[in-house]
Length: 127
Image 1 (cartoon, helix red, strand yellow):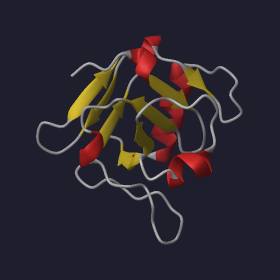
Image 2 (cartoon, helix red, strand yellow):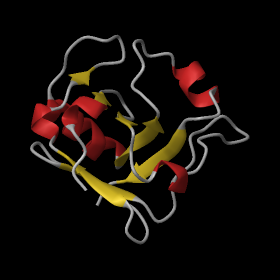
Image 3 (cartoon, one colour):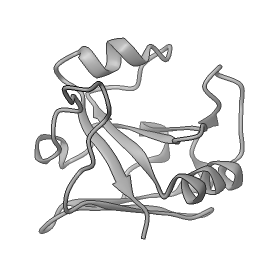
């Protein structure tokens, strides 16, 4: 399935994040909470971060493709960034945190996103 780039937000960082709004596999992802506060690894899921396309692949028929070159990229402070830099971040981290939401947030408040009870996802290793 192709997910519209407008329903995504790529956030740069030491561990990059991909926010997805309205992902068709939302309920198949785990709730991203661990007892030690770390975001859990999503077993059976992977991400292929590339400049033009980003593939999120899960177990069974779960997965999607994002036209990454057209997608918005920001850094943790909200400044615009580049997809090539986000891909380099993902390569350095060995993957990315993928979070599925009902809708994209207007501002990045990580504690609110991770404690909302409706956010799903976790760390996906890169292939």
